[in-house]
Amino acid sequence: MKKMKFEKITIKKDTILIAYKLLHDLLALLLFTFTATLVAEGLLPGLVSSKISFSKMTITLFGVLAAIAYLGKNLNITYDTVKINKNKNLPLIILLSFLLIGNSMLKFTLWENILITLVTLFIFSQLYEIIFAPEDK
Image (cartoon, rainbow, N blue to C red; front, side):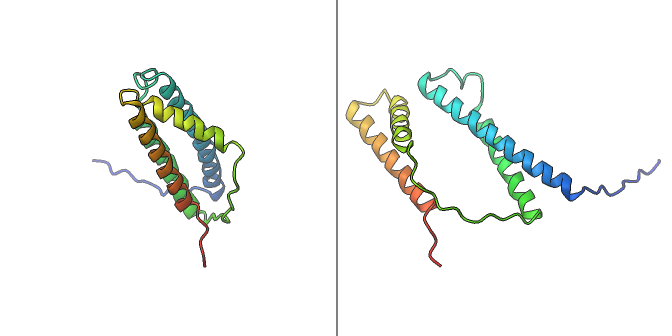
């Protein structure tokens, strides 16, 4: 039998940096697509989920995020923390979220639907505050 010799593959830092930037672009496209499909699914249930698996999309998103984190750590890329300001579109986003969550629970009675939707939005707002809270050092 013949033994195969494998040479060590060297990848330049520039190539890794280009891959890192392309992964960021891919992440933006995936997030836009995921958001659009979630909104379409919320408006017309069954339209998207009959053809596309949301679990596969989510796994792909997390895979791209993991690759970005891994390459960023290898390239020693760090970012300063940015202060998040209030968004002018926040009331519109809250209204759209309220309608989509409420629409997904039409089999409940009206008061149960409103209560569950408000509690869900409250929990999401608290998670938002916890994640983006300023760190005291």
